[in-house]
Image (cartoon, rainbow, N blue to C red; front, side):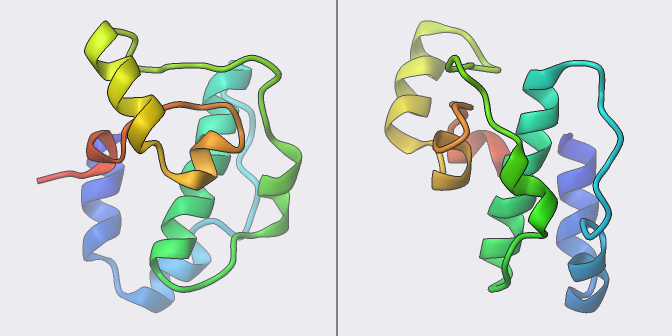
Length: 99
């Protein structure tokens, strides 16, 4: 994920806009499928555009903390981006930043 985020950051806006138009195949793990939807919406919002329609049908029924340590959970509850929170994925915005 970190490598993708780093590469994404350097792509021109018109290329980034097209990267998420097509719904990706399932990873085989509902949590990661929802994470991808949240990430797509989050990145689209940061670029000033709307998310593709496929992201709307993905959300979790139970909260999930991908980085599940006490400190990471507290940080995620306080700082999770809206696209993640509304889907039940709690990850700190800091975890999404790449050097």
